[in-house]
Length: 182
Image (cartoon, rainbow, N blue to C red; front, side, top):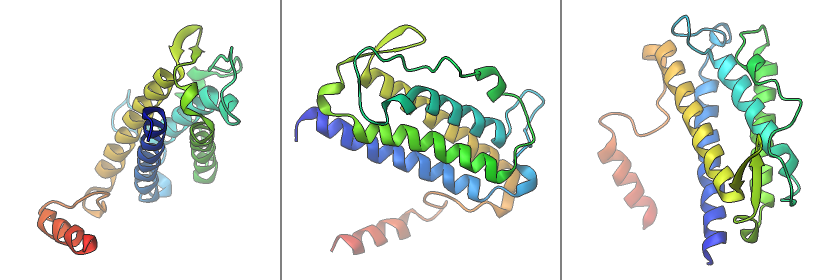
């Protein structure tokens, strides 16, 4: 497999895993905790979802049908500051935003071709390659999903259901992986 195809295949797979991790955390968040921050200056799950969805939509909705030369990957109507304002959106509304932002990003990734990766793309006028913009977005999304996991785990305390190998569970996990590989 050529390096561009391999890169896109891996990035698509890894980012679907990042989204699944976020989905798993949000599924454990009680309705009355979506607007709870851990500190006065902290972000609630609602704010993190609003911001990440706004970012992914702004940067990637225009690429849902593939790369086009001369694209600016920041929509002029985005109001980033309001993404960080606590509001009264319902869980349903927030999940719709979450799915929409991720849908834009994953669809754009699915429509990129290996030859697009070295092409120019600007974000707020700053030059990137398409690959650089994908990596930037991947790191940004991963960071906010990690924040969501930490936030929900902290709020849920003993009721938290791990989204990875449970503590003390590595031997059982490895045995299961060994069994599956036979």
